[in-house]
Length: 150
Image (tube, rainbow, N blue to C red; front, top):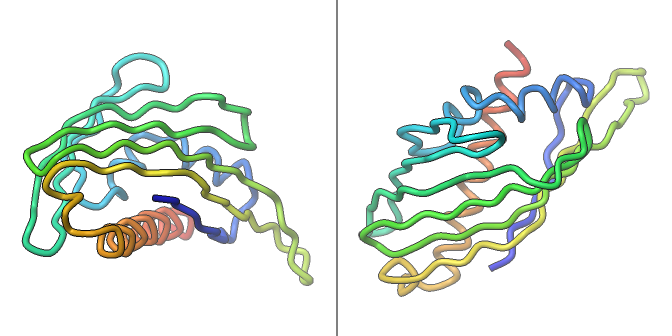
């Protein structure tokens, strides 16, 4: 399943980049995240509880950042397994500057990648999984935006 999105932050790219690289901020904004523990450079052990329709499950796995171009882009790789099945994601995050007509610095964050699911959770159907994934992604970026404002 393809995952895409574009999010605007009312802050300059370096400030958004710093936030996107902050494990504590990331963990607090991932819906259902129970832990995100460092496990090397740009690698984390994670536990996340996700509920969709009648299936709620806890996933444990890894999250890593690869192909990092400081202040511009990175690749986010995630794998998790749990009772409901497995989840595997490969997403490119790109930041680009945008200046408003009033001269304020904004940052556009583009998200593009794929997510695979298997097991019981996959039987829910791609449509439900796709809308749940989009909702989680939107909640994550809304939360990250709120951290820029504080």
